[in-house]
Image (tube, rainbow, N blue to C red):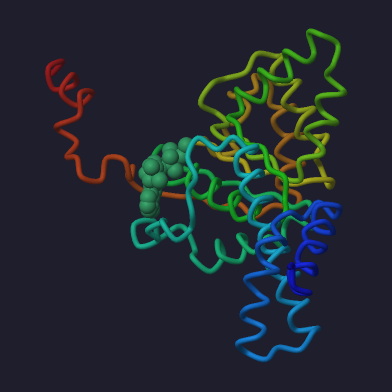
Length: 263
Ligand code: ADP
Ligand code: MG
């Protein structure tokens, strides 16, 4: 004979299914035991079940957003060694990770030589955003331009820009590593302009703004772009030797050996 409690749980299972919250099936039973053990009131039990459901939804949403973002590797601020990079201000980066700039469509620009942690910090901020219900896309500048070129070729450029506009945060990694031809520079400009004061960009680059004319083949395009990016941006310039090479003496590097041979 099913007890009244069994019947209640059978009904809860049905209601949870209808509500598309199947996890409640498990949490309702588990938390009912806790409620009995701790003499919770009805509202306290209801609250615990709802809290568990919302926490589970947020966790699975963040997991989905992290996957969709396309990070080459997931990095966090906790893994970043600030002692090794004194040009990065720990307090500023933790404040940025809290995400205030995202609601103001602000940008973050990380500049500096190779291996100084630009991609790490850009990823860490974007990972933090994924945990705050923000939809993120990550790619290199060349990668974004390739996508836009493909869309342009098939007459879908506007649709692609609208699709990217639905991502509240775009990470554009490695601006400056590859120079753009005029078409690529134009598409990149459209990407930056489409987000101006609407949605955020985190951008990394190895060249100071003064040399962006070389990247985009045109000083006027570069200036117009920089203007839009930095209008609402925090610019962080990293310094020093590559973290990748921190345990390597320069003389053991292949390029250093080649240079020595050339002497
Ligand atoms: P960049 O993009 O500036 O070329 P990365 O962010 O890719 O450099 O850093 C290179 C590697 O070194 C990555 O694996 C990154 O996680 C690590 N790294 C760089 N700086 C630090 C740091 N200060 N603390 C911990 N790891 C770091
Ligand atoms: Mg990088």
